[in-house]
Image 1: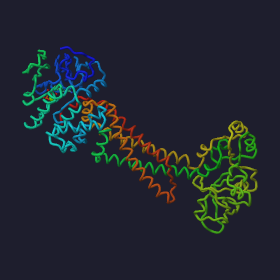
Image 2: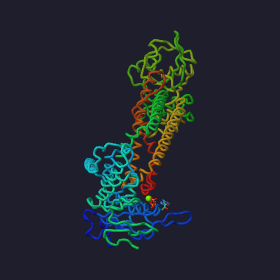
Image 3: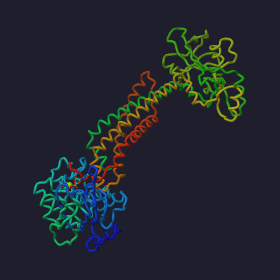
Amino acid sequence: MTTTPNTLDRNSNPTGRSAGTAALDLRGVRVAYPDGPDLRVVLDDLDLTVERGEMVVIVGESGAGKSTLLTAAGLLRRPDAGEISVAGTATSVLSERRRTQIRRDHVAFVYQSANLLPTLTAIEQLEIVGHIRGERSAVARARAMELLDGLGLAGRKDQLPAQLSGGERQRVGIGRAFMAEPTILIADEPTASLDPDRSRAVVELLRSAADDRDIATLVVAHDEAPAAAADRVLRLEAGRLRALNGTGAGPTVKM
Amino acid sequence: MFLAIRDLRRGARRFALLGSVIALVALLSTVLSGLATGLVTDGISGLRALPFDRIAFQKGADATFSRSTLRPDALRQFEKVPGVEASPLGASFVNAAPVNGGPRLDLAMFGIPADSFLVQREDARAALAGKPGLVLGEELQKQGVKVGDRYVMGGSNVELPVLGFTFAGTYGHAPIAFVRLDTWQRIQYGSDADGRFSAVVLSGGSRGIGEAADRTGTVVISKEASYAGSPGFTAETTTMTLIRSFLLVISALVIGAFFTVLTVQRTRQIGLLKAMGASNGYILRDGIGQMAILVALATAVGVAIGTGVVEILSRGSAPVELSPRSIATVSLALVAAGIAGSLVAFRRITQVEPAIALGAEA
Ligand SMILES: Nc1ncnc2c1ncn2[C@@H]1O[C@H](COP(=O)(O)OP(=O)(O)OP(=O)(O)O)[C@@H](O)[C@H]1O
Ligand SMILES: [Mg+2]
């Protein structure tokens, strides 16, 4: 897999598949936490590539380091070693300010418990993404409305999180991620707190992120539903990833 | 400030307590400011109204009229300085007893020659030039003193009629009374006044004043510096400044503590915003904006109520007075104190790690 740094503008390459630039590329990533006087190595020389339009699911034991992997991949944490490229930009040498910008322009997160801002209404949860991006408020509002509509939440747009059901909250959270028009969508156990029906709906939405929006989708899951919809399922064990099954996206897992 | 405004609106209850505290501090600051200005006016307005630039006291008098005695030769030295107008001024406190009954008056008595540049109104000049008598501050007229009332000046047997009234003014919290300089000397020294007076007031010029001061053994100070000689003036202004500074420090601490707690409570939310790609600047603008709006609103309420309180007090005998300028000063000082106090809180914002957004979920 070759990467082409300096390809900052993802719009110059709308699909990303034809060029050799992966949406997300991790090379030799290592993360260790201090554990008493010792270091506990959670990710060890880990490689991972996710293409646009691809949905990759990661499974693993509790404590295996799945969330840690997502924080590194989403530029929320600098790895202790290795290189993480997002949309072709190598990030290890970048300042925190630049990494934040890349996060704003290319990465969106979906959390287990939606993680909505308690004092914003459903539509404002989406609008603030536009505000952070410096979008004109009328434009942001129109896009947010359209997204909520597509999520079947148009009627709930003025509700605060406390007034929404768990499933609705999670769909608002996904709408917020879509609002960022990300290159990569990262989801940490997005279905864990939902019943099977709600869970299936969320998985379908994530799948549509990959299929319809051409987003590289990286999902950590405990339950079956996301794995069934994935292009590839990888298992995190002893700090590295191992393929469980796949649909022929290529041997991107280093053994 | 997308988030800050909605947060304030929908979380109003959480901000109500802090808002009330700030409003109370603003109220207190406004009333104190009114009192401080009122006390200053009560202390020196009579002197402030006189049209002079500088004043020469006897060396060591420390701007206090009762400690300063000068003679006509000192006046002549200052009169010789080109571009300078000089006038002698006798100043003392006197208790005036009414001849025909009524309340006694405590007066700040200024003795000046009728042709002095200090006397600006023609009628006042004419009154002083004629028969000896008192020209009193206007507020005494409101208290029922009438033209023609006669008073015996304490410490002497000089009896004077009230000739008329001039601008309202006080010195050392006593209403002013103008008399001709020779009348003042007669009250102060009896028959052996020997031309003595308290100080020389000066208007205009600047070159040569220092030399004249050296020749006459006097100290020349600015008009403003001479206010410190008014009894109680320095103590009052220092006390007021001290209380008001304390209030500002207290509000800075309260605001700082509140926003520190709020920032700690919001750690996860801040991490989330950072994960969404919000820069430190974006989140800081939001937090500081929220603080500024809250402080500004609460201050406006407090100042409005405080202005009302001052208005009510001023109808009584309390020496209170509010100017738009001191209202603006109170408001700006509170907002500045808020910003200073919350700087520590807001510094924490920059230290929040975005990774906590994905941390242990609530
Ligand atoms: N900030 C941290 N400091 C120290 N140790 C940490 C930190 N975050 C995670 N760890 C440790 O690293 C290991 C991996 O944690 P991580 O949260 O990535 O696991 P996970 O695979 O997401 O587990 P789960 O399925 O329970 O969410 C755990 O042993 C955890 O205790
Ligand atoms: Mg986890």
